Length: 480
Length: 93
View 1 (cartoon, rainbow over the protein chains, first blue to last red):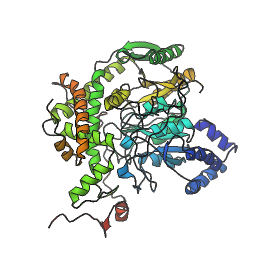
View 2: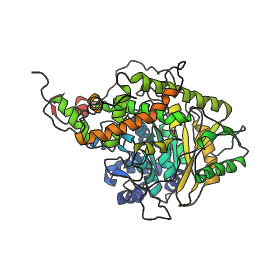
View 3: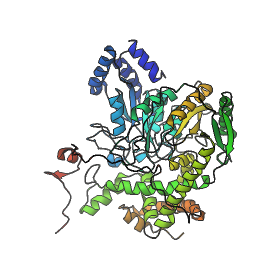
């Protein structure tokens, strides 16, 4: 039942299915909970007025752009009246009184939320193993080792698994260093991280404010355009929200390019990668060359510094953002004799190991005596990384890279943090530069697991990026 | 790289690490700081730090009063409240 949004809307318009029946179908899968992809599933009776309103709009012949579409929402978006935990113990009882900007747009366009997707705690992780509610299991199995449970990637691992298992049509995720694109790749679906500043961060539990960006995880590129049309709007409540004129991302998505397109392949990204990953790039290149697209080699000068820069800046911003969890105003309080004891006990018992580690890294690199050497230096190197991308995007229209250095690995396989952090080697540089990136499925590994490629475009050029991804998707599509 | 004083860092972060975990975090921190140390060799003497990647100016809205959360909304998630206040142990004698 992997239907696209436009196929589902057609079935609803032609009355082949009702909004309620559609919800039932996805709800049954979401409730089976085999892969732990949801922290919370919303029963039909709690959505009944939205379902009825939506059905009425179909009956009256004026459905909204996402009318009746069951969506998963990463449990990092504040949803009014619906528990929002960031997959953390410290927020495990938190019920927001307001709706995040992005999820409000999705509601305004008629979509119906089926539940809150599991994720890494505070979106810190690349395997969805840091969640307080337990790891998410990738719906895909290694055909040579069927009984192994594999990670879905992270941090939007529940979102990716839910879309792949068919328990929601699409899911809203967030991406700080690869948290949409990497799990999309490991679960064989599409993941789009828009340009930083495109989609408002207001109401998203903050991790690293200069990097966090909301985006969709979907079954196909066209669905990503549907969602982006809904969420990509200026918002005064986010001071980094850009107020440029947005385009319609759907309207020309299947058109061919009017001008000659040139794509750069960074040779430095492909050193030491496996043949299997290299094949994904070669196949993509062959498929798109047939359409007259030109490929050239490009070389970054800053790639070796990207992960270091990220693992200074993101924890620094996180340690500052997570200072708000003090057991006083919301979240779980652990008692103590003094106010200070409440702070210490609530935070120490409320955060898991990875979040604690990142808060400590952040506190260290921001502390007196180390601020200039680490934090400020990382901010300067970040500018060099951005300049490096701009230099290359002056020569080419897009950049093609692998999304991940490997296929989905076994739960519990990567124990040390640095080997985990290296999973984001191809996605982190784009995040630091603030550029849009999309991961699409490109093929299967020898073990029968999905692999993906990433296209990177210029600032706010999601329209042509989606056009390119849609073209590549047609050429590369594979059956499970 | 100098040695990491894990007690001081955890104090700055308002965390009280259990003593049996101090070494775990201390070693982990050391490994990561060593790993990111390669940034020191980058010449940034002529580079300004980058704070906001799109470097767009902040948009200004009209200064109009708008309705936001009520006091009850704000206090609804408080672990403990008394009237219109968050309740915590006595701070001043």
